[in-house]
Length: 351
Image (spheres, rainbow, N blue to C red):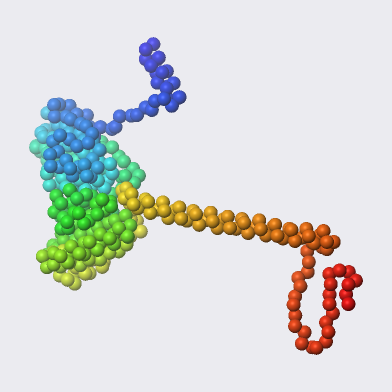
């Protein structure tokens, strides 16, 4: 009876909108890694994060879970999973964390870190089980960042690619620019990569071309200040994208590289844009709405005035015994020298 009464109570409360039932989040680790004293889970930054904590917060960490394989798995150690708000944050955290463990992989919005000892086949089996059971996130939050895909493949040192969403992670991963001039507060994205026998290529993506232009000028001023210490600097902007080379590039290769990178139509933005951008959009919408309303009222006023004056003129003609509509009258110049007849609208008045 207790269970039945409780069930009716909950259903009744939900029916009247008094309570919202929420399902618990899907575990990040499979049951085989949830047993034992090493298992811990929580929201936000874990207690063991240390210096990694600010970077994880910057990248939008949502929750975490850590566990150890059972004694029968044939391996020892721990497996840690960090889940982020979206795939862009997970990519930035992956590029930062992959230096900290022999096994680091990104799967959607999650980053898996394996610190395991034992046979390679057993370790791979454990990690494969973890990756298979990770929660899947669809929609814009599940889309991988497109900025790293703009890096040219020829000569690229793949292990050098570093994607960053904030100043802490960017500086920790050895960015070549002062973080304060990049514009991370304007939702900038940055990717840096090294090219064999050349130098470093930096790509910066902004929400709008205007923001890109503002920070592109700051970057140009900083490169001029650094002078030859920055190496071969070639800078170009295309819409919201800023491209720059630094280091031991050949001048011709550097110019060719940045001129060969172009925005593609599939560029999307799934990060919150700065408040001032929203304000400008609202101002533009408000202005266009006001213009449309003004034009509509003007057209309506013209119709009303036309009906008023036209109808009034027709009514006056009817009251005078004339037809409501009149034939158009034309003025003409008669150069023949003969007198012209005068026409009147009244019957019999011709003379």
